[in-house]
Length: 186
Image (cartoon, rainbow, N blue to C red):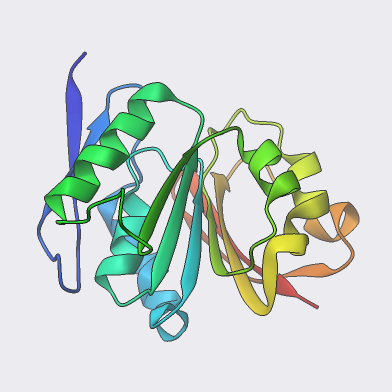
């Protein structure tokens, strides 16, 4: 198995490289920069959730920029291994850490059983995922002023408000084949 490398673009870990397994399609750096520029006011001291975390790219970027805590969730063995290795590169001892928590579990199962609340939820599923049910319950783990940053194919749109009447798309951006919706409570 070969590996891809990504980098942290800003903050205390700027330019540190992150490992990503080949089967993960990493988010392009310019998209990540644009997204974090858009949500910069929400990052400081936030509690984040990185669902479908892959390499942990989004969660580590948030931590680097001042987030207080991030929970990384993925059900892929190689992704979990990459997240653990990337945490070591950032000098995070996962066994003792309250800053970074790694969970190997299906995203829907995690959200269904999670009693926590998050300020920012990064949702970057594989483009062929069926995540309608996830949107029906995801507001249960979102703080009242929380934000969901949802990455998806720009070809395919999801009517969030039909799936969950409590949520709205506050902003939407397109970057080539990738669209990003910024979702909040109504």
